[in-house]
Image 1 (cartoon, rainbow, N blue to C red):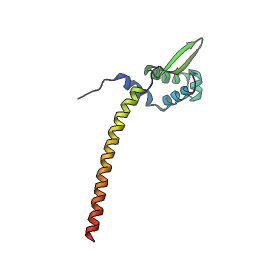
Image 2 (cartoon, one colour):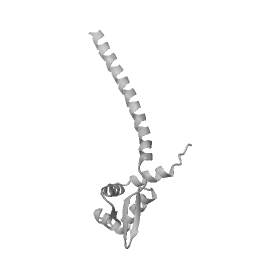
Image 3 (cartoon, rainbow, N blue to C red):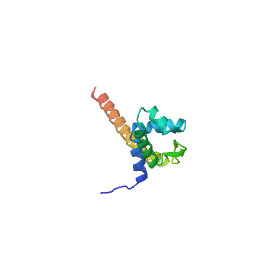
Length: 120
C-alpha cells in the first residue's frame, strides 16, 4: 500500500474541511480580527473559536499575535499555492478524461447518425 506523507497538505485540507474555519479565513481576508470578534461573528463561544483558530494556525493558514489582553488573528504566511497545485493536477486529469469521453460520445453519435441514414 502506497501512502503519501504530506503532513502539510493533510493539515491544510483538515483545516479547510470545516465551514466555520473557511468562514474565518474569508473574514480574515477582509480584515484582521480578534478571536472574540470572530466568536461573536460566528455565534460561538470564545473557547470554540480558539479551537478553530488553533487548527488554522497549526496549518499555517492563520497567525495570531497577542497585544495586551487581545489576541489578533490575521491570514497566515502560507498561501494555498501547494494545495492549488495538488488540486490542479487532478482537475487536469479529470478534464482529459472528459475530453476522451466527449470524443467517444461524438464518435458514437456520428456512427448512429450514419447507421440511421443507411437504414432508410
